Image (cartoon, rainbow, N blue to C red; front, top):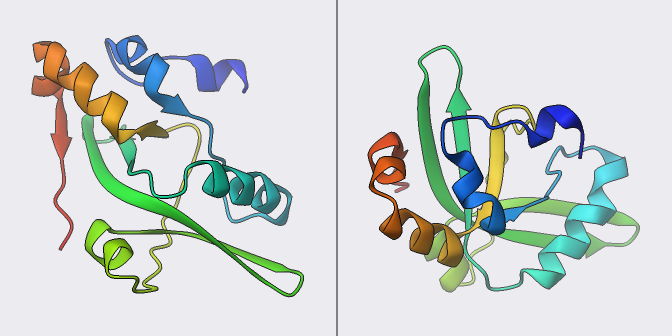
Length: 130
C-alpha cells in the first residue's frame, strides 16, 4: 500500500480502517493471482465498494460479491450483485477501479461502524443496484 492509499478519501474514513480490504481489482495480469486468492478467502462474504467522486465530492457505495474463476491458465475475477450471487447466476460486473478513489470493505464490519457513527451515515450514500 502506498502513502497515497493510506490517505483518507474523506473525513472520518479512519473509523472504517478495521473493515478495509486490500483487493487490487485492476484486471491487470499481475493483480489477478492476488485477487483470486482474496476471492477464496472472502468466499460468500458480501463486500462494500466505496467510491469517492472528486468532481462532485460525493461518496457512494455499493454491495457486491467477489468471484474468481480459473479456466485453464486464465483467471477471471469479477464482482456480482447479491441476487445473482445467491441464485448462482454468473453475471459479471466489471467496474473501473482505482486505489486512489475506491475502497473495499467487509460489509458486516462496515455496516456495524456505520450504525455507530451518525456523521459517517450522513456522509455516505448507498446506491441500490437492480
